[in-house]
Image (cartoon, rainbow, N blue to C red; front, side, top):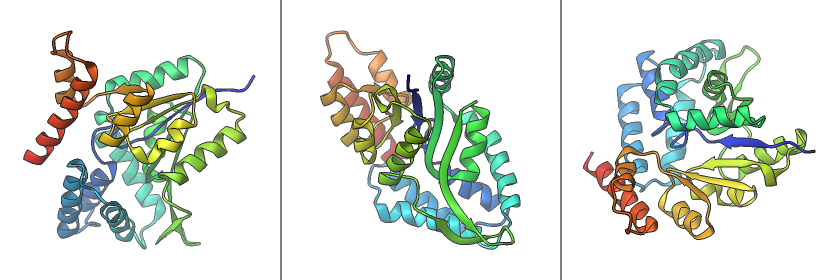
Length: 256
């Protein structure tokens, strides 16, 4: 019998917000990132939180982080990432998602962290959560083990994430009809459609609409939106509640 697995994204799924921003802030503490770089990254992160992000904003954030470590030793950066995972990322993991991972492990499922974040950061996070393996974007290094400022292949998002999961399923003899995918973005619509158990976690508005229409599992972990869902009268339609929660979260982000 073929096996089953659960695939989790990192940003907005296991943790609130952007791991890349946390990494940029940590690099600033090591005098790798300049103050101006961090401010620009923060401004882009605000636009992303307000659901006004563009591919250009996301790519610029990632390219700045990649450029900032050019010439640095991979050993050094991996040590920074282990500390970042321990002190910044893991304390932010949603307890419900940690329980979900543990439940999949107890059921005998393989569990994978599949993220556009750097592999150097994804690996210690996955190890600490007792996950099977981590996949992340891979930064190129030269023969001396120093970063070149380029990527090996594509960033692990969208189509590339789907291809990576398909490759794992083929190699590990997994039945995608028995697999779970946890994502927050409409970019993963094709991936979510291709598995037996799609989960929309803190979904963006486009993904929320698709999930409600298709009857997918929706996990709302953002505190203000959960308060709306839990405290509402029983006669209010659930779709209206989730929509109200989404709107409230956006308004709160804009006020910030």
